[in-house]
Image 1 (tube, rainbow, N blue to C red):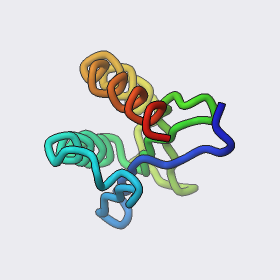
Image 2 (image 1 turned 180 degrees about the horizontal axis):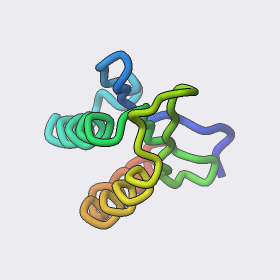
Image 3 (image 1 turned 30 degrees about the vertical axis):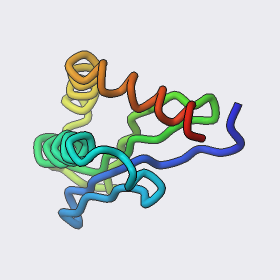
Length: 104
């Protein structure tokens, strides 16, 4: 459906930074705030990095990574936290997918 994957946003426990793709600056500030809170809390709780990425089909995926040898990264907790976010933020995530499919 789409030619390439697109990063919506991400956060890193290593740099203590949040990133929002400039192509999505048009999102309402409440949505941007909610994404920031979600990503930053994830990296504070689990460690490593988190990215929300639109795949080639336009679906939003959670992608995590950790530096090699990072003993503080909670791999099991990561899976559980992502499932929790997918359940508690389901409406937000579905709305973001629809937004992407309509406006791209």
